[in-house]
Image (tube, rainbow over all chains, first blue to last red; front, side, top):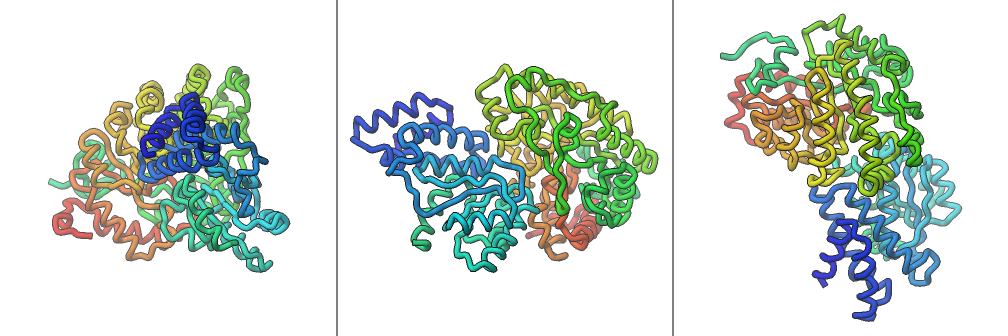
Length: 212
Length: 353
């Protein structure tokens, strides 16, 4: 299994969409896998390896972005957004909070969708608008991506507003400032930190037990 | 023999020659804190060259650092190209919606003329006024975003990556257009009185693009661009990692490289020895909650790792101190540099963190 994961990882890091696609179709023929099995057995582990590589400084952001995008395209082709195999639970949304740097959100969104999850993309939001929308949509897990330090500190406002309105929700945060200060995610009231984009799927899976 | 009573400029030039000056040079890259000093908003502060001049001079008197920064804010360059600047009260302004949205926009892109663009003229005026006040006592640092990094603000990160990987001819065209602007902008700042240009190139960092790409992209463009800038340059990667590409960076024509706080300063110093002066790498994010003792410890550790032999300037790792860092922390950092930074660094041989 390790061999196929490494081969797939190399294909997506080299932007070799054709090999990646062939590996998916061949695995369905050879092993009788469903698309979701290929996602779980190959795509998720490959993206995890890339994410770990990014965290250790071995993989660049551009590679992280491009590999996520390729996998998202691939998964979309075999598992459309309304496919029954998509994981629609927990109810999740992702946003960029009071920030204008969208790439982190784009990568996490791609990684989660490439891992078979479905989630709402709220785009850029302010703390108050975000809390209103989250309550309306009955979101259970909220992913917040930020780059600027002042935006990071606004997550405290989101947590405070959620508490004021008695909204029980898990907040998962990610973004460069958190990598420079290990205590920052707890300081702003988050429940979990994704140190790299591919960790999101693992974190969601882990906290699903808490919300269900 | 160690020299005494050097000016800030002499101190900096000595360390650039990989010799020990009287003290480790200290570049406190504060911009927005000037607004606090003047008791006005960040937006109002940057609305007039006079404010920035007054802010920089007051901050230098207060923190006793060795440079003047003529930097306003990064999106001043996108503003010059007709892009939107979005202001906030608690931090630096951001670039608004990217103004390059289609391939056609790149094909028809024309760089702004530096001396006909109000926001850039304001920076040049501030630089001239600062030069008139500090003369050759301290280096005045101008900033130009590299042609390779500017597209992040021009078109957004994701579309820029798509362009870089999938449309090489259009990418090259954009680099040529940006290069013309970068060279004109950097040279205008030097003519206005800047001592050196901070070549701001975070996309070249191995955090953003893989090291294998650097020779064909960031390095190639830096070599061409820096060769046309008529003064010394310092390459800043805005917290990005660069240890794996230091040999290549040394061939770009730059004199100084800033390292990330995620990299070991001693390893960086060893990799750059006699080739590049190292700038950095105090953690600007963590700094927000440092006690005076933590500030002193961080400074001492940095000096112990990189100070011996010169070729080192103490600074933060991002190129801009966050607005949220308290004055007390900056004062503690300054105090520590003045306490522990004097050469010869005899205490270093017995130092254990």
